[in-house]
Image (cartoon, rainbow over all chains, first blue to last red; front, side, top):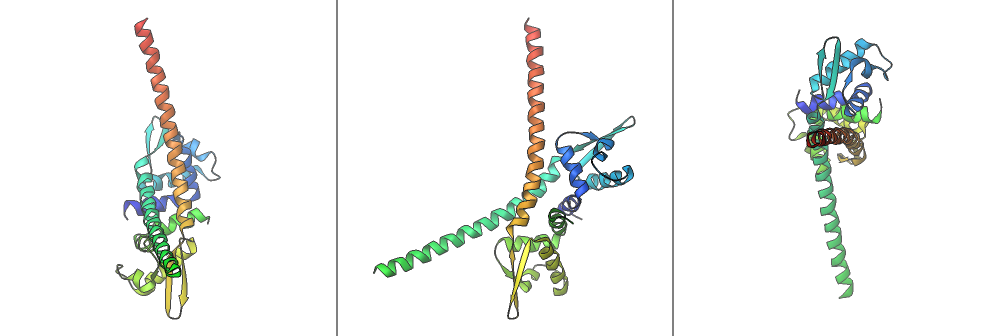
Length: 113
Length: 113
């Protein structure tokens, strides 16, 4: 599995996206992450493990509290991949637009002559 | 499964990402999509079905040729979700920066007085 495989896989679950949303607003404990989710704490810990394996989140336990933080690099990797696809697609549309404009000019000048 | 679940799930596979990369540069037949991939045509067709179910790609069969095109809306949905998380995270960093700057001003004026 590549980094992008793991990132997109981690983001493919609604509960994990809610956890990433919460952490993008600041660090949180596991029980804070669990609060809006209708699932057991053990299910939340499993989702957290997937997020940590993907590099989207890291956590640190101090005493009895595990604090989770977002790791922006993984999210940036996914964003970059999507933005590059969009750029390629928009370049193609531009070329298509230019081509149609040129074709249109040609037919225009033909009509004039 | 929500639209975002399906989009991120579809993007979590390297072969499907190669197919989306190819289609972001323009339409392609199934055999053109299969060319850079080391897999059977039937495996490519299965990946194509996942991409179509996610709304990232649509295809149309004319005669014996199935032509595949990218559907930018699904990719835009995924991009928007990631960009919103980054925006929230950057706002938090800004607030943290402001807070630290203010704290620093206070200690500065204390030293001066």
